[in-house]
Length: 446
Image (tube, rainbow, N blue to C red):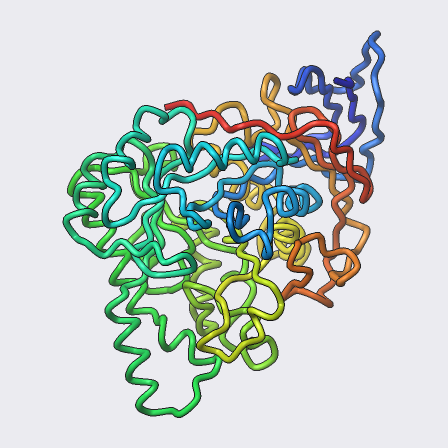
């Protein structure tokens, strides 16, 4: 493995910016300082006028393998992630077959070991009838990111709606429980009501069917289970102003037993965008009215919302261009999440230090990831070098998702990802990939 010395760059980590050098050796950050030099054979990189960030850790992606590989594969989506500065991901269990047994879970790790350019972990899936298998994950608490519970239906038909099963899972899990929270009963009622009123439904009906009340009801229920057993609960993709009253910023993240995530599309789009983008922004939970987006930003900045993620969920073009009711729900986003937040940094909506906290530091803290998420001596060298003075526009020609499209096509970012290191390996360098080394399985300090 090569030794690298990044010189004269702006290092963003631990809530501050410092100018200096970073020495990368044997997969890790060997030294941080000024005017560093080494007698060893070193590849020197000029980082002046650029920002060095810890690699993004995305705690919610759908890479579709196994079984749904016409949409995406672990290889293709991890490659797209790397190009966008995401160096580690945690992938969801609703593949085909779903990861509902320990054997199927380990099969996904095996695929990633042989094909993922990024570091990886996979959630164990929960159903109404696999409780014993789920509880076996406790023995792997240092090797598995968590348990996923779909308390609202989404792609993959993994809805867990048996209250007795939910009670047992929250009581028995020693790992973090990540939930998709939408109340299924309310969604069905809203859908049937609209069908009686309209002959044809449109994408703009999506936030009416999957409304604020359905999200709040389910999130409230999950929190009641978590409080009952002092479970470690992490609620994914919060999308409503109403839910924000359920979370606190009065205690440090490390002490929270209940945490929350917001996704980039809920921070960027609103229901006004259905008029131009239609099913391309159909996702679960739905993108909702602008007042929700405003409230999400406020909660992100005051720490009621802990993490920024993508819920990257690619579908092929034909699946998105069906009628509203048949169109698949989900957006491909992992290549552009960091760039999108850098757009908001440039606009003054969020500081770069805060962005790094929410996309790297907080994810590492929340999941207790070992030696990642910060630019610190001894930590793995998962690093991203960014040029904030070189713009980039999303186009079909530079999209790396297997599905080949993005809801952000035509959008110009103010920044460009220049280099991405994973475990000290320079895997992405000015649009070129070195695929001679793959990512590692994430480990957890639990």
